[in-house]
Length: 201
Image (tube, rainbow, N blue to C red; front, side, top):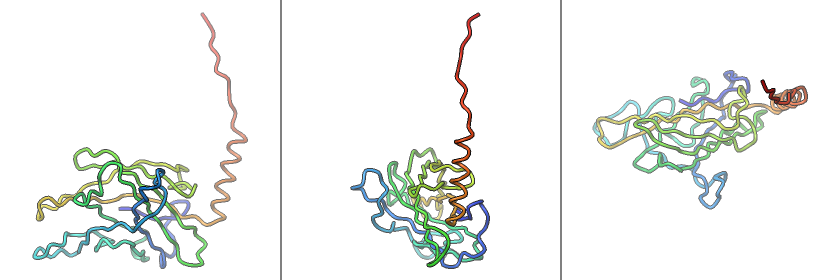
């Protein structure tokens, strides 16, 4: 499952008003960075009713709602299920994950591009790239990371493959971002470079 945390990876004191949504990227933008429509996700349910055609969901987003609104009891956890029957796991498919804080929040909105990669068995690779210049996870400072989406086959509904997105991201307030940038700037100023030399025998 995915998780939204604070700048240092901590659980936020209050998630009320936070939402997270998955969007299709605009195919006319070669960078894949422009939002088009909200991604249509397959409806799910939990608990599952085997007498209908609605697939079994997972917590916390039991109905696979998009957008998904966080509540404090979930402690920042979210879930989205991709449907391979909708070609949502095709290599090259691109999505934009948008985390919106409450109005008048000290936290900034986050945007992360997800590019679907190769599939090997029940594992689909993806690359997540920050679109706002901030690290995907501020704890490690990386603006591009790779991950895996695990496909879960629904044995009761032959041919239905749903895949769980697992991406953790951080939200930071303006002061935390400034502190992070200042630390990186200091690191660059104090870094020493040594010339490479070879000596013959």
